[in-house]
Image 1 (cartoon, one colour):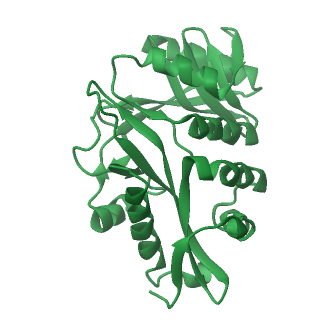
Image 2 (cartoon, rainbow, N blue to C red):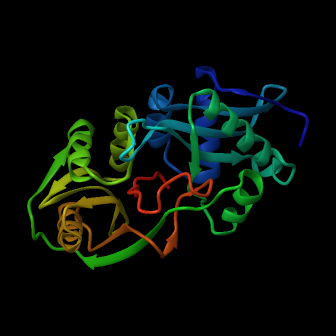
Length: 271
């Protein structure tokens, strides 16, 4: 690794972190502003610097609990936004940042750690680095949009209340209130939000003329196409895409083998 210092971020780092995030991921500054405004309540960030110049960073969100039939709810750390300046790549900096972020998650009482690799080859990278395997899968669905059910916009507090009720009796990852609020603001940055529709709820945003449903929770899986189509129409989209948990399918969350039940409901991520 290059000669640099790894440390936990401070508020003074936020402007440089926001610009680096935009450079690496292309996300609008409004989204990064929402992230860093809520980050102190959701987790923290490790930065790498040399001579006062920010070289890279890795964020860890500790705002999740694993809800099962057990009384104790383990805190789950979610590795997010590992980024390195283009001219500093290939020197082991991403590896060092990821390992330091994992340690930071543990210091913040996370007993489980997971991530959503941005690309398929990264599953192998996380396997070598942290011993992670793909523990959760999802299945992609698509439909045309049509206003078949009424749609109601929700606050993050309302959404969490409905989500807990719909998932009662199942294993699921529960975001904290600040993390759920970030999900709402994340969707809002891209023309969406949190919604109630028919028998379920969903978090969705726009990508061109496509409604991307990041999470869809309903009592009856058969209702999912109606909800996705209705929310898509509400947002003015032509097509709606959504994902549901699946035993087999597209690789999704990576974590230590056996740490998260295979039937755990997640489907709320920030990719």
